[in-house]
Image (cartoon, rainbow, N blue to C red):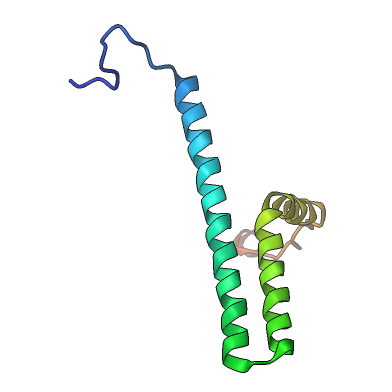
Length: 105
């Protein structure tokens, strides 16, 4: 059987693995935000290059800024949506089923 550590006397703790996973998750999130930023810049440049219109470029810039804002504030948006869904829950009306029909016979 192979071990994760090169030294058999070394103990790998779960906390170390969780710290590593958290670090990698944060790095991937930063990478995704950077890639989206570059894609927004490319979309704005493409909008200007194809249309030569400042209005189309401004619209592309505003839509790109909206996408970047949404990605940056994703956790708070998830909490808002979750709280609205949980707060507005209503019970479904009771519909007579097969049990009610058999009970009435």
